[in-house]
Image 1 (cartoon, rainbow, N blue to C red):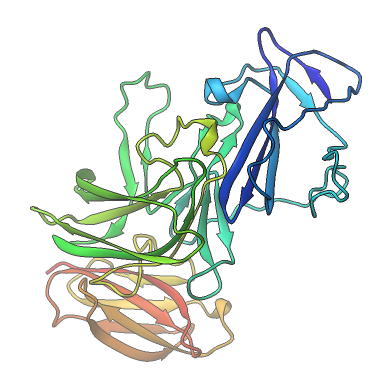
Image 2: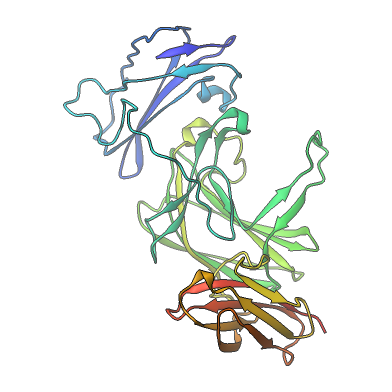
Length: 371
């Protein structure tokens, strides 16, 4: 290693050993010496492992002993490491790449219609279909507002003015059109916590751009299995939208977590409201390949689907009310103007879907009837 240190700072090297998703031992070592030449570092694991691991996670932080400062470092510290090996073993862990000779480009994934931060990944470990939403608690660079942070994803977010010095008039943005007072959120999840960590799922009920009520539940270890969760709720006042948010670590303190929670993984799949089996989606913004006008209006809408997204010529338009009942269906073609006559329906919000010839969902959005 080479290390350039700022005043009273130190680097840290750490390693977790796990078996079946459960933590066996956690070790960390401090580096406090400045050196411009490569210097050999060794650290013995004491006490010895409590069992035989199947996974090792190792890492390094250039600034501060994160076990006592929750990741708060000092700008300017610089750590360079190379040729990382485990001593006393016949083979190094597969794919460890301790020589750092193999590199790949990194891509940030976010599910369509969701707002995701650091710690979000696309998981091929799914309850149904090909993918699920993965969230992992990570140590983020301090310059990015970091520290130990839970992986987070949701259908809404808060927008705050810059330089508000604590007196922020933050506005909730996004959300999912929703008007029921009683319902149940249903989803499948798999959770592998580190230490005593817990994950969380929260609902924020919004009316006129203000959160009027909220509810949530903690998620515990599933021991490597997919489990179904049901979260019923009862409201006194009907909202106009709802925000769904998930966190891989304690949702009471997602941005100031202890270092021992780094590595907790939450996976979510097949999430929907009982009243809306179509599933959770961000429906406030139109699909970029779909144009709807006028919206809102008295009940007759015109829709154009750009044919660049599919080789199919025929598509099906479906419209559902807010309790999941199909109120309209029509076979039409791409690159043509299709009229959707909902004049017999009552005022309110409706959800449209565009279905291709293979039954796939090609786009969706909301229609608003105001008479």
